[in-house]
Amino acid sequence: MVLKVIGSSSKGNGYALIADNEILLLECGCPFKDIKKAIDWQILKIKGCLLTHGHADHSKYTKDFQKAGIPVYTNDETKQAVGEILVAQFYYVPEFRTFHVGGFKCIPFYVPHNGTPNYGYLIEHKEMGRMLFITDYEYIPYNFQKQQVQHFLIEANYQEQFINKDLPNYEHKLLGHASLETCIGAIKANQSPNLRTVIMCHLGAGSSSGKYFTNEMQKVTGRNVNVVCAVPGIIMELNKDPF
Image (cartoon, rainbow, N blue to C red):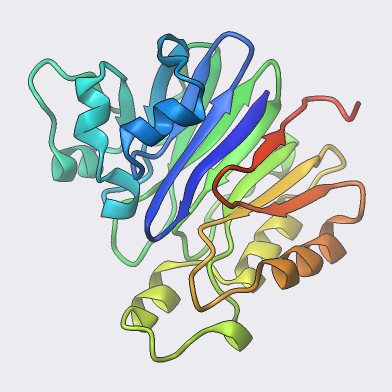
């Protein structure tokens, strides 16, 4: 299994989990033409897309995904806010309800995002084990240590020493997003001996430093865990086993 980052910022978010015979997309915030290029035009392998919430940098191209016949899954509030086209495969999934998208087992749960209904997802596949995908959150209200999560795709949007207080969205950034410290706390709370990968996503322009973030997270995880920041084009192997 590999994870390919298509976009991971306020300009647009999109990721692809690429297994041998199937693909699960995460977020609808990047143009569908960019998605197709990123997955080498293997459109028929796409089983569906998980959408976290209705902000444009995550949902702007949802209707294009629908037009392409890709099932999209999210919470009811986001479905209502984004809207759907006729005969679209746009599904509301209740919180904690397990559902399958091809061979991907998914469990959604709400995380706070400054009043915007927002889902995180626990995703499991035989090729990668378990991954937590959480973005645009203020904190994680649940603990997943018992689930022995191997991989995290998790937001670390800003760190106080790097943030530009003159940013027009400064207040929203603090209220609706996770700092590096919050992200590190989430990893500590959910860390298990099976941890393999931490991918920090949605780093804010003018408010973060990738190298610093990576070094600080590595102090927590130890050197046996692969720690990176999500940048467009990066490809990460997500293996179930250490070798």
